Image (cartoon, rainbow, N blue to C red; front, side, top):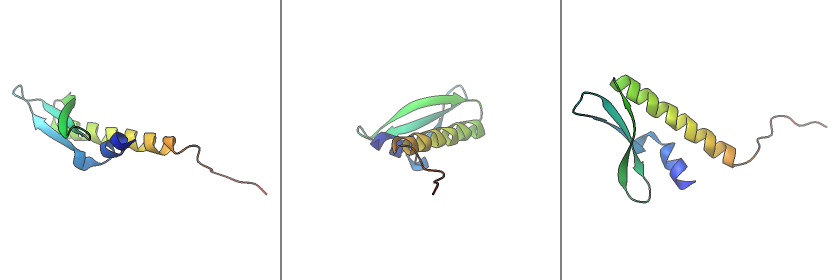
Length: 75
C-alpha cells in the first residue's frame, strides 16, 4: 500500500531523455530510494501522459483496497 501511495503522487516520478532521443519515465522505489524505469515514449508529452495514466491507475487501486464504496442506501 505504501508503494501504491508513493506511485499515486507525481513528485515521485521523473522523465529522463535517453541517448536515442526517447524519453523514459521513472518512478522512485519507496523502500530503496532508487529510480526504476517504467516506459519509453517518443515525446516528452507522451511520457508525461503515461505518468498521469499510471497515477490514475494507482489512485484507483488505493480506492479499491479500501473495500466497496456505498453509492446508494434505502430506507
